[in-house]
Image (cartoon, rainbow over all chains, first blue to last red; front, side, top):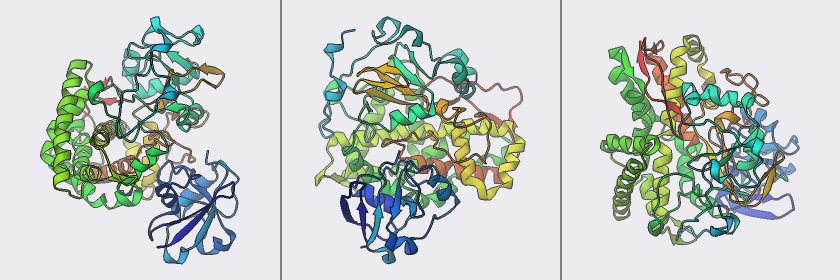
Length: 108
Length: 426
């Protein structure tokens, strides 16, 4: 099962198994990783699962999945960078095994 | 009223497996306004029951922004509360589960000696997430997507049943049976319970007679307890079975947890989509040119659904202040109740200019139809799917329709806002 590492704003690392087909937001919620709110549940209709994809992974993960994600990201609470994604829109595949994402200071 | 006779809200410790009544302080009516409430902030909200509200509830809630302070204290015989109408304030409160707790959320009577929590809403973080994790795989977008075919068929069957008549009473012909049929499918309960469920639910949410409410709720409790026992003996793929046999922290859910969870889904699933459909179909019937716009923009259906949910949000979110706190310069004390008027927040002109206008091209902003924060609605994706399918299948078969001539739309008082009857002709 692919592993995903979440690095909190304070540097704390959590590595959890996330099944293929599941998304990075749920991987955090199901495993009790703090720092991702995901309050709309992946509609997507909010921007509370904002993450920064680690530099080593940005090519493989790619940019926003669609116009909705891009537009929602503009309203994220913390600075939006080229590596910013809504983690509910990053779906795990074997190619993403080992993915590292960094969490912003706040989702609100 | 004496503040010292009841539990301090911040001190109430939950044991979800062994629930007990938190016995929160209650302040009811103008005679029980707490000392820290400034007299000039005491106003009647008019919500839910006043004749002015019932003329056209959504217009009323939009107008609150011009007629009332952004935060005011509304006395009521059922419990006084700070009423919030600003989008920003509602987000702040609903996203702060530490200072604004979600306890005692529903007016339905729960006996002290058989108390149960409504799960997950009455459970605080971090435990709350454990319960959501049990059902989220089913209620997340991917889970709901697997139900699409079945929901679509239920919608088609209903519409095909009356399309040739050239008329129907929408709330009973479609608005009620669609979400109830879908709910029964998901829960794994028999479809022949439809009429009975509808009756209990109508009474509980809209009756003004507490004895009637208690009786209906009692019947529902008795039925659900039997259904749970059955699913424990013979598990199946439905949600009642899933919850009845679920584990958290390496233990089975207690009897009280299972019941509180199933009972809450039952209450949450039956009336809200119903009211939403009813409100939206009144609007469609009155705006044939906008119906044509929806038909002409099939690729924009998700944006259309989102905007209609903003325009016709149907419910409210209450919280209890756990620690003294200031919001927009207003002092709130622990034990105060706060009511977030979600439809009013969705009409905040600072966030949604010209708020009553239905505009499918609005910039995306957080809408409060499903509230926000940890307790945001788990059924939101299901509701969106039902509304999308209802629009698509209805407009395919009945693209032009109107309110039956001479009928005046009247709204029902109650915590879920919608019209009493919607007779349509085509």
